[in-house]
Image (tube, rainbow, N blue to C red; front, side, top):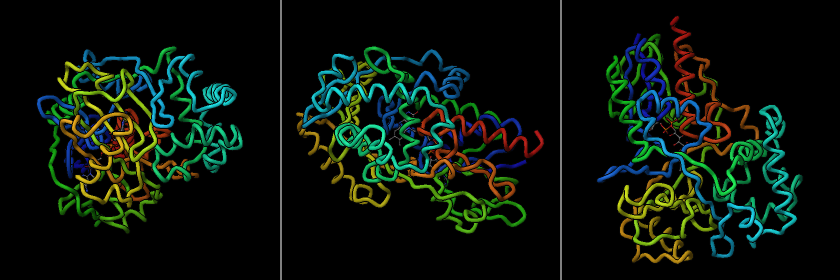
Length: 418
Ligand SMILES: Cc1cc2nc3c(=O)[nH]c(=O)nc-3n(C[C@H](O)[C@H](O)[C@H](O)COP(=O)(O)OP(=O)(O)OC[C@H]3O[C@@H](n4cnc5c(N)ncnc54)[C@H](O)[C@@H]3O)c2cc1C
């Protein structure tokens, strides 16, 4: 049996890991192995987009261990900050939260109760709010002040100008999974020296089986009795690339497959090196400018691993925005100009690189839960998994993609009698 896998991101490679024993596999990758979690590798490897993991990431952590990388996993309690009127305030301990000037005390208390309420909710509870817009939900439950002072900046930073379309169920689910903090901050994990090692091991492992990985974009998928990908015959196809790209290649196939359209956001991220830092010790600062977060990687992992301070300026936008279209130099210039607000001058930046992804995750718009992509489509032999699969709700993550890859592999094995 011969199976084509489109995309060598975590979904495609995790599926290949599970399927290589049963099928002859050919994995097509248009750009870089690792996709959204791929890295720059000069003298060390660093992800193009910031990446960390969580203790609850069961499938990812198991995979890391099965690939012999368990000893590379490190856990750190990181510090989080929030900008208010051009200054970044730490928001980790109760004392710091009380001192934060951007919110009234009563709103802080309301927020604490809201967090507790979300933590007690189950999937069926979130589902009830799927058709409610996040703005209406917050206004109704927490009031306009909290919406404006706290949630709007966060939503803008996470969804760019598409924030108004997000469903309230997404917010509730997200607060539920992300509010389990330690007393002095949030605990995050990392694969010391980079997640690139995970991809290197995955590739090495699958290539010991009947697997061929080719650096070739898929430009044609046809079903004429047998499946044909770029003209080559297969028994089945697993699509793990963004769904809109399938429409670009074969609109009819996409529409017959029954996969629903979902709205995507884009990511625009500058990684820079500097002798200076933006904050003293904060890893993640939510800010209000062209980018939505300053992520100081070397306040998470040791400076010695890199020999320079590495800082991400992470922004989200929509696929047709100016930030996605204008040239690399201009975006970097725009981001560095805004960074001045936090005391870092362009001359203090040693180098800066830009990475953009047009389809980097769903917007989780109202009604999203009914649009989640099923693994088995309406066309026999055509499977879809990835960032719009169920395990990537309410947060697209490495764990979600590993889980989606493994779950779709089970479905395919079952359909082919294994
Ligand atoms: C800014 C940002 C930060 C993130 N941070 C974190 C984090 O801290 N922690 C975490 O757990 N997760 C994080 N994620 C999410 C995580 O990176 C993704 O969930 C995961 O890597 C997605 O893997 P995937 O295989 O599903 O999709 P992708 O990585 O998108 O893989 C799809 C692959 O398909 C390829 N492809 C596309 N079109 C074609 C074609 N026509 N032919 C062949 N190949 C094609 C692409 O090049 C790509 O390699 C982050 C994502 C972003 C955008």
